[in-house]
Length: 248
Ligand code: FPP
Image 1 (cartoon, protein in one colour):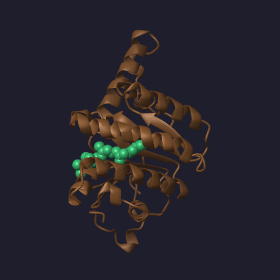
Image 2 (cartoon, rainbow, N blue to C red; image 1 turned 90 degrees about the horizontal axis):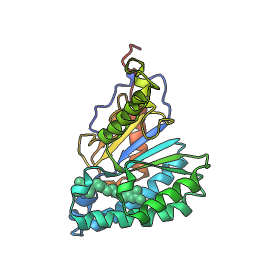
Image 3 (spheres, rainbow, N blue to C red; image 1 turned 90 degrees about the vertical axis):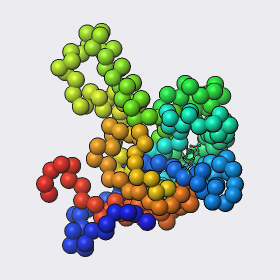
């Protein structure tokens, strides 16, 4: 259930459009396992199964872009055994995704410094991106070794190199220059960011792109976040009045 207060009927926004870009923080796998007396790895496996289910559902609902936070730049600080479990799950589920997402016409892209992962996962990432590149349905961004600050640092380095080569002078750097230097510059910013698990923070996710995203926090752990909860988050979004700093 969302922690945000419901709007009164007369305050309904003029449009109840479907968000074009939804971003999901897949949190709560560990707590889900603990509640059942299972190892954390069982929670991550259940989370990975749910990842496939929700990707399919979002595509069926007509979402154009879905971004999922699967592994942050800070997640390397977990015990080595848990990191290895997660990497094995990424390999297994991305390999399945190569086949499974064909029917849904889903394009898969990756955001993050993926060159820190073992070579077999890097090869798979390249294969998944290449194989799905020309698909015209929903675009799925899998954020792996992703951090919003790291993405901004990479963008700054790209821009600094352009300045250094004389292509750009500092006064020409605009907000658009920064947007254009991010990992997926051709995609719209997320309209809606959903975080299950009860935590109320962004945890370094899409820091630049989230400036005007609607945030929905839900008291459900990721493996239990099903189509019903996805619909609930969309319904909450559709009640919001988006003003982008203007008066309407
Ligand atoms: C956060 O929950 C979850 C993660 C760090 C891993 C998310 C990964 C998956 C759901 C697998 C996705 C698979 C693919 C192929 C993209 P947590 O472990 O921090 O939960 P806790 O806060 O309850 O401990």
